[in-house]
Length: 265
Image (cartoon, rainbow, N blue to C red; front, side, top):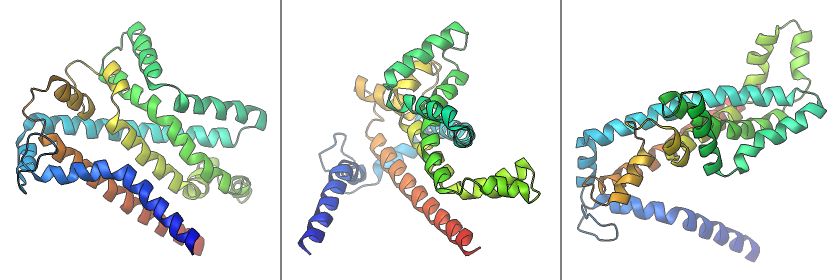
């Protein structure tokens, strides 16, 4: 009993440590104070300022579109890479698996500078193309890491069994393999969106000069300290947090229902 209480208390303490700054931000998004930490009464004024600010709305649209494009392409590439690694011979799969994990542990500043150097050599430096590729380089390894465990949980002979029963390679892939690893693909897609939304370093080194995302806009606003829309960013951050939590919950429920249906079959 004591051990159970201690374990629950430890979990609660860890969750409070992680989420208390975000919850504080959400609370102070409902006051009109220009300085966080100062309460001037309950108000939705920051949310009104946010939606009336055309510049922030355009930057939000830029960020969301970039995140969706980069996440979709990264999910396709990462899923294909994970399947290729899984079905490769052991002597080939092991080095490929290790290489695919290097970008995860590599310093992001190294990746950003390397991409900037590469794109400057091929005349794609600071274009939308270089920005999307940069985000794909950042996100794809995490998709591989999300899909690989699901492939390992799957029966490795299920694909060959589908072929023996008359299915073509494409049919076997989409009718047998993909449904088995769908939850991993979904997790990789959501993780890619999150990574793209809040990335600053790769974005700063690869984006066009006239293009801004939320991360670069927030950094410049806080750095300069003169942007009148800075308080409204509290409201924007709170909305992003709530939307991401809702999206994760909805997707988890859908994945559970999908897994339940597959188990029933």
